Image (cartoon, rainbow over all chains, first blue to last red):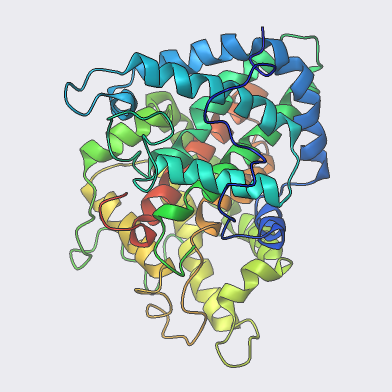
Amino acid sequence: MSTATSPVPGYAYGSARLARAPYTTADLAALQKALLFTQEDVEALRQSKSILADQTDAILDVWYGFVASTPELVVYFGDAKTGQPNAAYLEAVRKRFALWILDTAAANYDQAWLDWQYEIGLRHNRIKKNRTDSVDSTPQVNFRYLPALTIPITTTLKPFLARKGASAEDVERMHAAWVKSVLMQAILWSHPYVKEGEF
Amino acid sequence: MSTATSPVPGYAYGSARLARAPYTTADLAALQKALLFTQEDVEALRQSKSILADQTDAILDVWYGFVASTPELVVYFGDAKTGQPNAAYLEAVRKRFALWILDTAAANYDQAWLDWQYEIGLRHNRIKKNRTDSVDSTPQVNFRYLPALTIPITTTLKPFLARKGASAEDVERMHAAWVKSVLMQAILWSHPYVKEGEF
């Protein structure tokens, strides 16, 4: 069952209370050109949406298994005092992560989407990490892991793209579009980490 | 003909005069885990070396064609006064770029390699851009394009990986290893752009 139909605490895509992103839709268009991201990728992402819609829990089981088995990553869900993974924090993020899968597949790129990407970046950075879920965890996710996670996320997604009868060619197209989209988002999320004027 | 046998101005991989990178081989190992980068990727990269060795000029024709046709990118080779692309600068970088292809395929990861990655990052950042070739160009390559270029570089490389009779499966393995390696390097190159303590 998708969690998309229930309200998810901290999920704020489209909220008027979000800060305005420091990048515009024109900036995004330029970045998409550099990423070879085209309308064909938009269509491939949207094709993936119905394929993934009822698989988000299974996908998150794989992703959380990877994080749990990688000490370098699970530390970011650790309690600041004990170092033990905070189960409530993991679960709160997981609910938003399921919606992120569907939002990535929806591929609607406007200022509201950009503002939400910026908010997601702030929540990884020391500026806002831990606040959404009122947890006492590590102060930031280090920058290096934001672009890096493009690979495990999209590599482990691929089998799920193939589970609903899409042709091998379509699975390749959807996978390639996902790689571009996740990398594009990781770049946008990196803004709070980058020195003034260098983004 | 590969340019690997002729001395290339500004190419400094292995030079004792390079600054020590701010990341260690242990940091790299952790990053590789997050990227799902394994010994199999090392082997796939090395398999690609002999395939690519006599194709570097043809590959660079494609890459430079992409840069030349993308105003958002060619600006970084522009003359600071006229805005026109600086042909000598483009050519100087191109010679090092050919060696970079072979070095990426060699996949030897030690401190000398890390120091060279750091130097490459500095040369994109305002800290050192333009100095190597004594040019008066734009003061920096903006951060956003470093990770982004992973996609055009590896997408356009793929046909060249297939030109020497490797199996379709091997081409896929080599391509996947290249994506991981280029993204890994782009992350390392980003260090000078990232705020103190957040890398």
